[in-house]
Length: 273
Image (cartoon, rainbow, N blue to C red; front, side):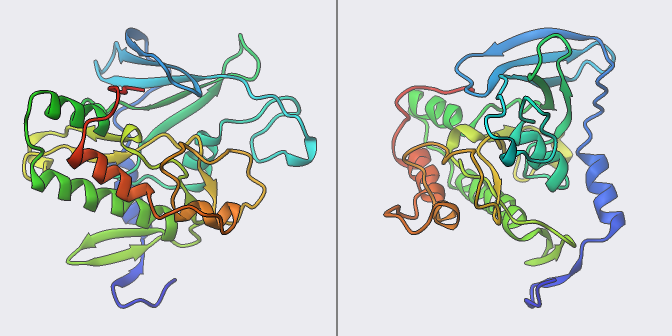
């Protein structure tokens, strides 16, 4: 564990159990589900919103495209002899513990009808993504409140503090640190991958939605120098890239680009995937 003065101890089993329970969102894969809508343009699979007939809650199901194994020497945990296990599922289910500022993945199940494809079940964020929110505000000539910009900055910083260092904010500028945490690089931090989740009013900060970092399809362990997941979206390359790809001529843009895009100009097209 780090000896930094603001880190007050190791995250306890009781704390993790409470966080895990809060992030469960009453999901049961055996429920009967009804199709509600689909998102176009997703690059890693077909994405749909489904409603549980039991709980009447909404969930996102990502039906991944198959990724064949091309080099058996590059196999990772979860891969079969012929196909790759989804990167997003490996990172979220095998390497990270639940966190309120990171998208919750409940299950990853192989599709028995289509070899190499998986169904990833994750939480539904009713507020859409940050790009859609910025587009809607600017289209209506509304000013994005400074308080909301600060909310995004704080909660995305909390998500990255957890990914990089296993830190969890416990109030008053203090943190606990998960034992044995493996540093993770998201690899594609941008407005399209930052989602807004409305909670019940008692849980809201300033009557604003929670901010959640999602889409871990380009993520990798920081110590994995042989990852084949790619670099994420051009134009958003961050210092994280240097840790994996070497000292190339990329500026510190990833997080800065998110906020510049949100407060200064509308995106070229609204994105929902």
